[in-house]
Image (cartoon, rainbow, N blue to C red; front, top):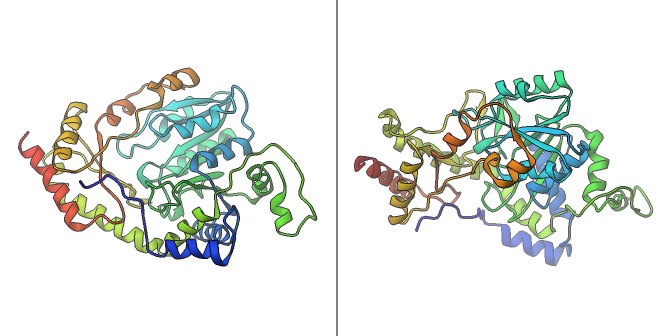
Length: 378
């Protein structure tokens, strides 16, 4: 079976884990490897500050806390996303307002955002689907005119850019995921990026159970105390050690993934030219990171048949998000603004093919040949 995903393993992970345990003798949060990851991410993205978290979900929750969004206030976002994008704000009593997506990139349609704004709107939460940037210039301009925060759910966006700027570093806050399904992993983990350093002290307090323990560790105070509400958003140093091993070869991992992505596109282009499938669209101003390779079938029935066909040939392919506004919690906590022209229909067509660092050229060719065979026989 060719799996859909294998967690990335670059090579030095075990040595870094040994070093954390035996040499550094530090396995709880904010040790030497956490500091290295933070420095790497800040340099890579050009943000004022970056803090590792236990997940992208928690990074989003931190962003919701930092903007102090409250009961009944609204956040505009796509419905085609993971539940965490909405959950982070629902936990504080806010209302997710779902907007339709663009069928070309599967990102929020920036032209529909302004119509969704009300006097209760506090923020826009964008999702960079498949590591392809949203139309951020337009979104930032709308946010500026309406005095709104912009929060980037860049869970899939590490090493991807929009007009040369790192995804996650363009809005007020950016949120990364280092889950085992992502290009770079720490098992479970994430990071919050702060464009403005003014939020750093509040973010550190929030992340350290509401205390100023970070200042204490830096020798800025002689003892730490409870300053505000907070939680434990620090990942283990073991997780950070695993991640740092991959960040040291991040460019190499990125190039390998991009090569497999381009191979998929080349081998399946004849089906697109024949009008049988659609392949991913990358806007000219975006540099993606080959987080996933998907195709779009004609409809849900055809996609279901293709999944079964590939499974019979020991290839695991999967669909993706079920739109949040169609879920029980989505109907309970949020609302859809305008017409669902594309969100549901496009979500039912999209099929993700295996994509991971260890995927070989031979495996991609085998997968592509079986996709072509499916359509030859159909």
